Structure formats: structure tokens, C-alpha cells
Image (cartoon, rainbow, N blue to C red; front, side, top):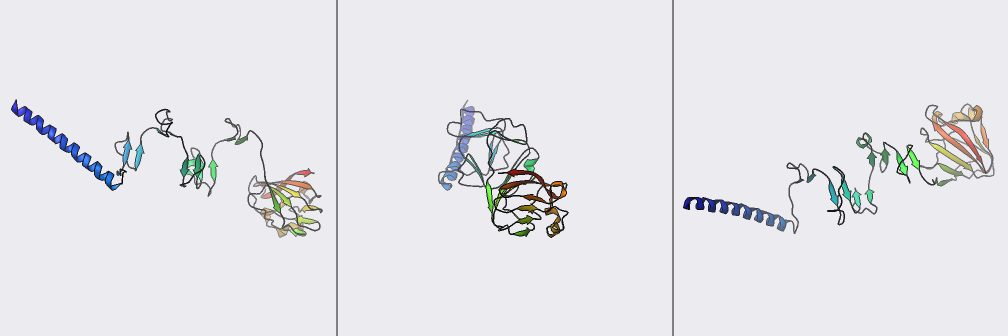
Length: 252
């Protein structure tokens, strides 16, 4: 009987010593961290974490979200604001950099400060039926272009990102023999706000040779196309033709 009590006492003292050592370790960690605990790696339902924090399962963050809502399987719910690459996000999700969305696109580097989306994009709708589906109005801002000159204009470069361009500047009739920056499907709406005629020189016209081949224009019925004042021309770039195509005229 005495022998059994002695063994029990030894086991109890051993457990107390282990507990005491753990407490001392935690107190040291807390004191070194000034109230914070620093561990080499923390695993939640993961016995072998390889990162600072490894979570096997879902996660919920937020005062009223935690303990109340269930995150999707292996997913994340965040009540507040999330910043990626920024320490001062102002929106629900602030990204300082680029983003890729999609099964295969997620492994592709998006343009600087840009985004690539593999699937459909819905604006104002939860069920987009096309690549871009907008339920509501759409605005294309106008750029003012004042460097067009009287006479012939070759390899014209409009402002980056412009689609609707208001042309001014010429003091008499003027020509455009080519437009730079063509990308497959890119559209341009050029509004002639001058009091003079605007002519697009067809690719086969001798004047067109002053512009780079890929910047040239296929005119209506394969000829030069003139636009009066207060008239807009709609052009679209064709990769197959490596040319700009005139597809429409809008008269004020």
C-alpha cells in the first residue's frame, strides 16, 4: 500500500513539474513579446504546420460573425475590411497590385494593377449570360484630342485607354492615314468637332504608305471615307486584317 502511494506521489509530482515548466515557458514567451505570444508555427486541426498559421478547415473573422456564422467548406468569412498588399484598405477588399480569377487563370500573372477573369462578369446582375453582362447604364468618357493637324496625320496616337475621342485643332480639311495602338476588337469613336472635313485614307491610297502597315485603315468600299463636321466615325481593329475597319457613321 505504501509502495503504491509512493508511486502515485511520484507521478503526480512529475505531472506538476511538467505543468510548471510549461507555465514558465509561456510566461517567458509572453514577457519577451510584451503581452503577445510568439510561436514558431501554429496549426489549427493540423498537427504538422509548415507556415506561421495553418488552418485545416474553414475560418470566420469578426465580432458578430464568429460563433454565429459558418464559413463555406475550406473557406473564409470576414466581417470587416481586407487588404492585400496594402496596410490601409478603404473598401471591403483593397488590392494593391493585380488579381487573377478562374481555375486556370489563377496561375497566370495578370497585368500590373489589372485583373483577368476566366469566366463571366456580371455588373448589376447575379446571372450574367455573356462574358460581360451589364444590368444598367454604361458610360464611355470622352477624351479631348487637340493635336490633330491640318493636312495629313500619320500613325495617330490617341490617349491611352480612350474609346470616345473628340477631335479639334485643324484649321482646314485634314486626313488620317493610320492609327497606332490597334488591338484585336478595340473600338474607337472619333467625333469631328471641327468645321472642316475629316478624311480616312484607305490602305490602298498612296498617302497611306506614310503610316505603318498595321496602323492603316480599310475605308468604306475600299476607298477614302470623308466625314463632315459634327460627324462621328466608328472604327474597330481587326487582327485578321491587321487594319482598322470603318463600321459606322453617326451624324449629329
